[in-house]
Image (cartoon, rainbow, N blue to C red; front, side):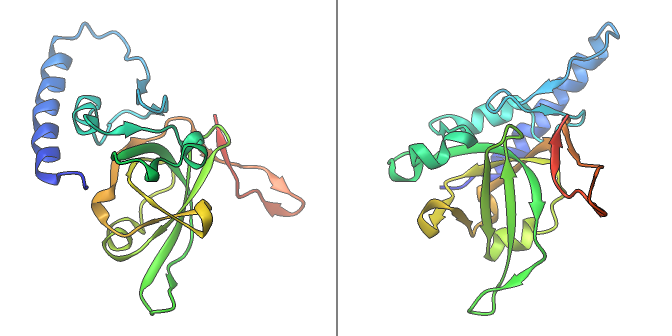
Length: 185
């Protein structure tokens, strides 16, 4: 099962029109942080996928919090499952044994739970340059290496929601080296 791109674009257009109308009618009060309601992540302004669209896409799919993916083993169920997280690390492109390219992404809830994703084929082609701090929905990733990593080989199994408002790179020093960890502001 994959996300239907045509439906996403239509829902996005309709939602953006509704948002524009609402903004025009607003009183000018400052907006509260945009909350991605499934994961609880705060988003920066300019959400890529409106919450109403995501809610529509999630119908008949099971949301699994990122921290619960390895314990609940949702891939064993007969139902589509989705988790949401922030891209916090990305490797340089690598060559697999069959010489195809792939990239390793680390996906986090910014609360201490991480998943390692291996992107191949069209997923690699579309997502290998995605910026750190991007909030993504992940659909039906396949476990490899006993569930330590998850394989994504189709671009439509990832969906960009927006940018995490509370994600940042550590600015400190560890010895004489710059810290390369992420922080949840």
